[in-house]
Image (cartoon, rainbow, N blue to C red; front, side, top):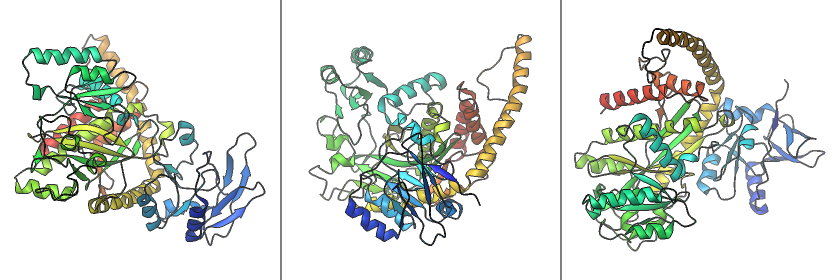
Length: 523
């Protein structure tokens, strides 16, 4: 059988020599030297060694690889993974416990999954071996995690689909470019007699995480003084958060995206409840430990290690603890969860047309969505996190994050095994769209010639509206299939890919209708 050839044009990753040798021995990898002095590793007990052929036109090389390298997808065996130096140890431990073996240099070793905190560029993603290799970041997948990009997208979505649908983000302005609009809005609320506690605003750097640089405004002057040379988002501060024993909290929800074209998303059902470590006081604007829930801030708070009323030590609960608390207080977790799922799906769909198609065939993304509940139980999207923290600092972290990674590996293996059938399904649906689109064009042409008004918001005539059940697993481990949630949503998502260049909004409108039914029918 002819052996497939792969090109792996990635730059070198520095590794400590001692650590490299130790893990090489542990994984029992075989070093093979080629005539070009480039090293490669093959699986132990393989009958043939890998051969390397240097490329004459570029610095990258062509590696000829035997079939055992690819069995990890086809037969659910452990493959080869590559990590950057600053990846949390639990990621390595998860892969090793699943029987995977570690590589060290992307330019010299064959690998199946490359994981690093930083982004990959378009060239790196496009040169991956489709169906054989994956990287853990989607090209342009970071856009929704930039606070200014998220604000712009939500403003656009509110204009297109209405504030009643995209109600879940606070009123926001991007500074300094919208400083005059913000000043006018702020002063208008003052003139209208809005109470000071209802006219509070929070400043967030556009491209920072872990609570860095965030502060509450005490005056307009404070906003003007901080924006010079910096990009900020200023948001209306939600003054009435739901409190537990007097403490503010939010929800960290993990979302795994295995494809944007068409969209396929999984939601991890465990997650974290993150508490502020001091009781909420609206009058104290300078105390971050009573207003912010970021663990990276609260772990340095004076009350972090104290036994807090009802909360305990530290600053985290599991979702199960929250469900138990809600049940005791007659709060419906099921309805809240459905509304949160809808918020996440609408946010993801808002960025589908920003994600390039060709450079994302061998990528995936793990996001951290932060959701706040107000005292009326309305969920609000605070932000979306890129490379969410996977460090383990507590028992709650251990209970959530390690299983999250283990189940994620199972999903990636399932998705890659089904890549061929998914590709055939995709091509079949695209062919159906092309055929039926021609029929739709003729109908619209006839309507126009008869001076009949055309409703451009109507979904394409060939999108099924029966909402039948999907023929795919709804749960893998503790991950639940979030999107698509029925056949109509699946077809609409495929059509969004089909209409990528013209950014057709009709399938999005149809999905919104389906989401409304979903929430109404399943409280």
